[in-house]
Image (cartoon, rainbow, N blue to C red):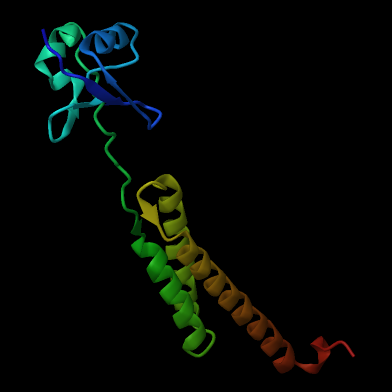
Length: 165
């Protein structure tokens, strides 16, 4: 007969024991202890799991421990949309080169709109929405500014019959 005594670590963080092997078997039948319950056998140096002790192995023969694999982290890294970046660069160039550079403003507006469409279609893999919006704002305001300067320039250069006094 085995005279060993056991101390188990409960799920509540408390230690229970020393108890006999008979008491451990009762706890196993009551599902208070499973094969992964930490146990210290008095007279040994380290803690182990109850399911690894030969005297309790038969108690767990029909019930293998359920081990759930960790869920993999499949969060994809988003890449900045190249059209968004180039749209913003063209919008900046439209303002910095003469203040009224229509080709850069049109290119910036076009590239930024394409970028927004692509980002909305592939939101999980693409980023750069703020770059595209900045490109649209810079390009559109540059086109509006150019239009206003053109209209007011024509009004100032128009013949006297077109002036309203």
